[in-house]
Length: 553
Image (spheres, rainbow, N blue to C red):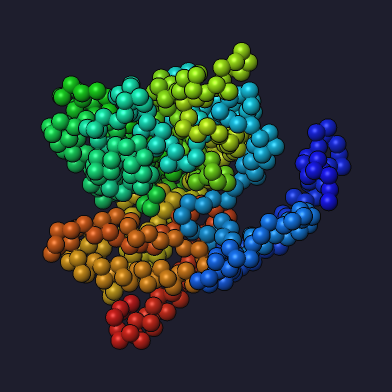
């Protein structure tokens, strides 16, 4: 066995050890490249046979080696793990998985090599500097004052929502850390908002019954009248409206809430009832990156986007230009930012909101309270934070404003052309988010003729809606069988439709195509159409075998 010290990079920077590591990395990269096929979103173009006892078998067969393995064996095992793994190439349309850019990989390597804990710059100098730089960059992007804002990397959009909710509580009840949560706090969000708020309300102790779900418009944005009505009802019953999650790019349909209208509603009700300001968090984990168009010259259109794409960008920019009205925003770089998991950033408009979360020096005796180091992030929920801000910084340098504009505009252009083609080819297909511009298309297949308008207007029975849901869920299963060709996405709740007979809100099942790869060009639309045709033929054949339960035209 090697000496233990041989298992590490060198401490003196010697060439031999460096070349050993580079050779191992090159071996792994070569193995992975051999598994790639531009026409398949799965490495080795097929999935592993994950039979019902697959993971149980792994559990039974896996042991810690008595003597450590050599590096060639480890690389072989790492390659085995990658076999059949989804790879976000041109035919990957699953849920928000991007192709990590080269700079993001360099940043990830830098993060791993520096291995600093971001909680304190005495341990994580590189991460601290990168975090301050990213804060300044994103503050400029959304319109915050970089001297007054404060940001930090966190564990995902969930982490940003959770910490922003803690900020809202601390601003309203400064002694809550010692005395607990007041029992009359209420939060508000779109009925299509991400479930992370539900989990955060549970985790903070507010209670999920205190989350008021707001109706959405046909473009899947939060209905302002319903928001106002629900806030007033809470106030009139003695409750305190504490927090609003305004989603700027919903996960399934890219619905964008009207930030300006949300803020104006809050100001009106705060003045009317003499209540404290309501904390607004812009859940911009997904859509916030389109703020790169906030200063785009739409009149001269220097990047020569098509008229349809330009119109869609103007619609998006009309809402995202008001991000600065929110008390906090977040960016998931592992979504549209083109980095690997997990790279999320929470940005607060006023650093005082964050400082209220800090713990005392006495409660953190081994970090921060020294004469050296002056970046101590005792306000984060995490005690240990990776230096993921390094990854984000590298990627922001790589793309710049124009690079992100080109990429995001490309996603949007492809998506608009895809929608047009799908509706022209399939008469029983409806785009269920046609009023939501963005890189996502959701569509729904019907029995016989398409009747989405009847569904969304509440003119169908619950049984009729669920019959179409059942059809689409069967189609999801057929789509799963061709993941080696196209990796489709799907959702069992793209939105709600009110049933004519019961008045119940019924979730709508839809196929979801999320375009996030720079390699996805309009040529892939033909592939999508062809594979969808084959899937519908299979569904038709299956339905005929079941005595015509479904009729697909």
